[in-house]
Image (cartoon, rainbow, N blue to C red):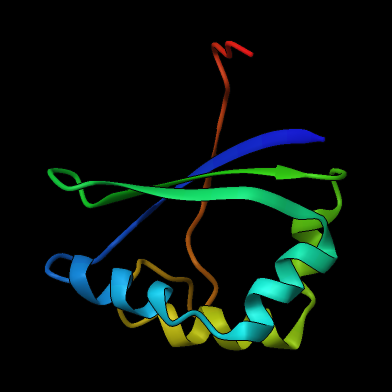
Length: 104
């Protein structure tokens, strides 16, 4: 298992809506993430900068590519695109983060 992290931006004023949408996340999305090789997934929010930070474990380096090819994931990203910084195709603008320290 490899741990990865990324950051993305939440549009101003949408923290409650982002949280609400994830509290009622589509059942298929949770299953897709698990089936594709994602586990131990958390998203943190830095309110002053509107930055979302995702930290997750993946079974291999191809997990994110496989997720991006899923029609269900593409629909979820489109659903979230009105409250997050997104590309013109509805995918989120993600920036990978480099791990500098880890205590196991």
